[in-house]
Image (cartoon, rainbow, N blue to C red; front, side):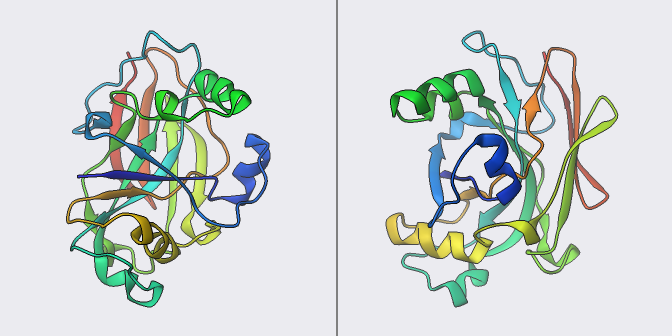
Length: 203
């Protein structure tokens, strides 16, 4: 099982990240050891002083595919979830300055929070789904998939040029503006529309 993630996929997030608009999807990977399921607590890693949340809609691939045409991409998923791409921002900033890969800042253990999956039919058009994150009862990040630079189907078509997609692979589709730090004892709750998808504590 692969965890494929997309960076810089919401325009308003580009400004807070001080990045140019990409001309093709920005892709990075996480290992399966990054997954954090079942509302288990997230433990702040010792190697970073600046862990940020990035709330994202996640799709799960439901059948084998390679070189998938965009017009057929919707056949390759039927369920969605909400996730968090936890990022060691201090490590990422240093890596960007040095032109180095992002893995240590993005792919560490527990960095890929994932909710249970629900049928896409519960929400309708995948490119018109609102989502938000609350910390300690306050909404800190909101987004809607209609604001993606690259749609889910475009992402699947692009990624499948390079990697065979297999049943169970996960695609984290990018985060909107509003990312920020977490601290010990924070309680995070994530919602697709008004449906609570995950709730867990930071330790």
